[in-house]
Structure formats: structure tokens, C-alpha cells
Amino acid sequence: MTQQDLEDIDFLIDDDEIVEGSQNENHKFEHYRFVADKGQSMLRIDKFLSVRIEGISRNRIQQAAEADCILVNGQPVKSNYKVKPLDMISIVMDRPRRELEIIPEDIPLDIAYEDDTLMVINKPAGMVVHPGHGNYSGTLVNAVAYHLHRDEIEEMDDPRLGLVHRIDKGTSGLLLIAKSEAAKTNLSGQFFRKETKRMYVALVWGNLKEEHGTIEGNIGRDPNDRMRMRVFSDEEHGKPAVTHYSVLERFGYVTLVQCRLETGRTHQIRAHMKHIGHPLFNDERYGGNEILRGTHFAKYKQFVFNCFTLCPRQCLHAQTLGFVHPSTGEEFLFESEIPEDMQSVIDKWRAYSSVGK
Image 1 (cartoon, helix red, strand yellow):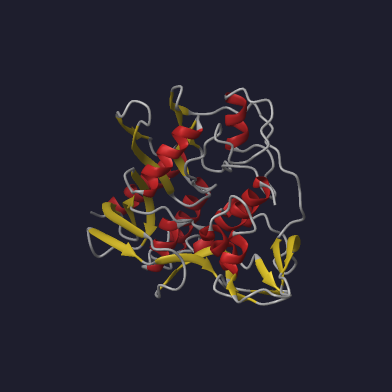
Image 2 (cartoon, rainbow, N blue to C red):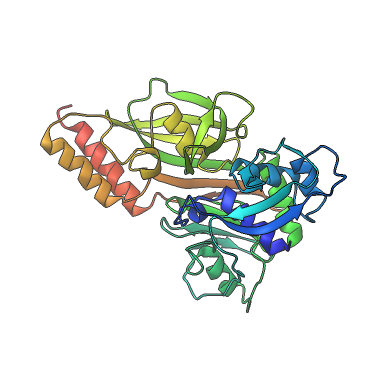
């Protein structure tokens, strides 16, 4: 199994742009197969695979198992499954095997900052971060490859491209790119140790009771809908996630909040806000694209649908990004203005809520 193959698994289990491209949830394609020896002792499958696949962590294997990408004798298993003699172990995906290469493309980038070590990019909503199933071109990574004058890059996580973190296709805001392996290692460490500052602005349904709050709960892929994440009450499923929020402005039926991430799970804010009964406004994946609060009057319904049209995505913006520069040790803090589509909806709700006051 090559490093590119491992990255394919990584993208399948960890990013919504790839999963959303899957056309057939009932049919999977086998990419790799291992057969246990006759004398194989009982061994957890995550340990079994970690010693047979170079360069992949047990954590990644466990996530692949959670996404039903690991089969034993044709049946999906969890990471604690004990491998038995002659077990046939398959790694499957929702798409056929495809050699993936990154082709540089001349796509404009909104660069907030750049030096020899890193780049801070203001990603527009609707732009996919990296190539994958259904999105092999037109991504931010293709644009970065062109900007850095790379003729052709074979591996998705090539340190020269240096994706340190990711944001969803429908989310706008600041994204950090490292230009060297050393810079990526340093910055990734800051994210892992929770030393970075990440603030998001979100418009959510409902009027939150408290001015400030903290949402805690393991986040993992929803077993009933693999394109959605959910919060689990027990510690056996998902990964720990913590989101702190503060109310910025109340509009009656919706609330503008600021969210500070303590962890960085897939769809963390979207899943956490859904969990406490306040889905993001117009978040189709989590039910926020329906009228969840307000009146039954036709005029109000038309107002909400007009807002949906103005901002046809979840109202979520990665506004603040802070970190320590890996080369100079200087503390950097970047701010990004709320984009026009989301700001127009906020302005409409502000005007609507002020009528009659």
C-alpha cells in the first residue's frame, strides 16, 4: 500500500467533500486485501494492520473501521475485532481505485499573508479544499500548487502543499498552509496541543438561553448517515470535542454566535450546535435549511426563504486564526471579514428583529 493509498483512506473517512461525492452507499470497491496466516494468533485488527501498512497510525486504522472501510470475510468490523487464522481482510472504499495526482491550476487565491514559511488563505464558501472523489480539479490545493509553481505533485499531503487543517466546502474563512515539512510539523503540533486560536462566527436557529456556554461530547460519523457527524453520549464512540460559544447578537428566532474551538473534529460546530437544538442557519446536512423557529405567516416564510437564497450554504465563517510562527516565534493573529452572502442575511435578520421595537 502506497502513501497515496493511505491518503485516499484518510480523505474518505475524514472529509465531507469526499464522502458527499459517493454515488452508491450500498456498493463498495475493494482496494486492498490481506489474508491471515494459518498460525495467526488472536490479535486486534488495528494492531494487525498497523504492522503491515507502513506509515499509517493505529488511530487512522480505527477511524477507517468506524467508517466501515475495513471488512473481515465480507463484513464490516470495529477496530477491536480479533483477527483469526485465515481471516480475509479487505480495505474498501466508495469508488474504484484511481491514481490521484495534483495538477496545478491557475485559480485566484485570496492570500491574507505569505512568507517563505507559510501562507494564510481566505477560502471562499463553495471551494473544496483538496482533490478527491468527484472533485479532482478546481480545489484550493490545485490553486496552491500553481501558486507555488509546482509542475506536478503526486501525493496529496506533500509537505510543500502543507494542509495543516481543513474547513468544509460550504464554510468560508481562514486556512493555514505550511510551505515545508518542518513548518507543517511545527504548526500541526500547535493544533494538536490546542495552542492555536480559532474563532468562528455562526448564525444559528433559536434564541440561546445563556450568553456563554460550552458544548462537550464525542463526535463521530453517524451510523445512519455517513455523510453526517453526530454527538455520542458514551466514550466508546467518536472523539472528544469541545466547543465554547458566546452570543454576539440576538434576532429573536435566530442568534449570531461566536464559537471557539478547543478541538478540531469534522463538522464540529455544525454537529455540536445541532446537538443542543440550535442547528446552523441553512445547514442542509444538519436540518438547518428548514424553518425551525418563527411564525406560520406566509410573509415570514417568504422572508426566511429569501435569506436562504441570499446565503445558499451554512452560515459559518472561520473569522479568526492565531498561531506562533514556526520560524520566528512571533505570535500571529489574523481576522477575516464576514463575507457578503452571510453578512447580507445577518443584516436582514437585524432589520427584521428591530421592527416594532
